[in-house]
Image (cartoon, rainbow, N blue to C red; front, side):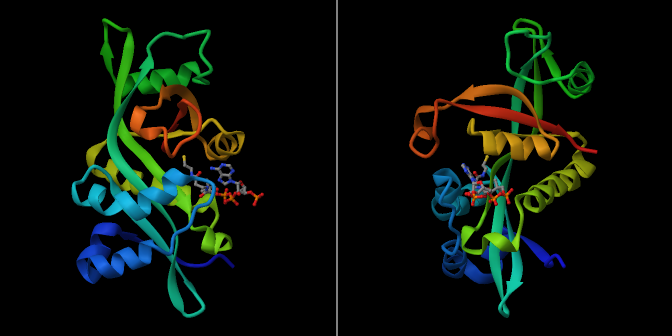
Length: 208
Ligand SMILES: CC(C)(COP(=O)(O)OP(=O)(O)OC[C@H]1O[C@@H](n2cnc3c(N)ncnc32)[C@H](O)[C@@H]1OP(=O)(O)O)[C@@H](O)C(=O)NCCC(=O)NCCS
């Protein structure tokens, strides 16, 4: 039987328990495969959340009589660009029907012939490897998409997107969960410490 999960906003945890207890809870998180995900929750999550650069959502479940942090995701309001016409040299996997859907939610920049789409970004997503068998990535990602659906039920919009390292495991994980590769973004100078490679693969999903 699947465990029962509770999703808490970091801001609610902070206002209920204060910063010291919250930091202690966040310090139980451990992600050995992704320094960016690990550092974010310990070093940046509170400040990003307080300043509303991103909103952090923590997933808990019951384990040996206590609530443990099993994963988290961070959402931000951002925008991405995508070529309006088909680019045959690109590695993007956008079908014509998806391109038409994107067009309905986009502004067309006629100078560059690019669609500009404002959409929620899943900026971070990770399981806590101290309790890695208590949640699957699929469930965690579905919680992130559900939160986006909730937001979009109030604001409109249908797309969610993310940017991940170009690793087969990650591309397979997101593809299996309905995301489609639509481009790449080169890393900013300050992103190079915690991320491998020189660019990130951008993937989007049309939420039903
Ligand atoms: C992405 C994630 C949520 C998917 O969860 P999942 O489908 O349940 O997969 P698992 O965590 O069981 O990982 C499966 C395998 O991939 C490996 N793996 C996980 N993240 C990886 C990464 N970023 N790079 C390389 N390998 C990774 C795991 O070590 C595991 O290897 P094993 O089978 O040899 O033990 C989870 O793997 C995770 O939290 N990864 C680290 C954070 C991360 O990379 N997030 C994506 C940011 S875009």
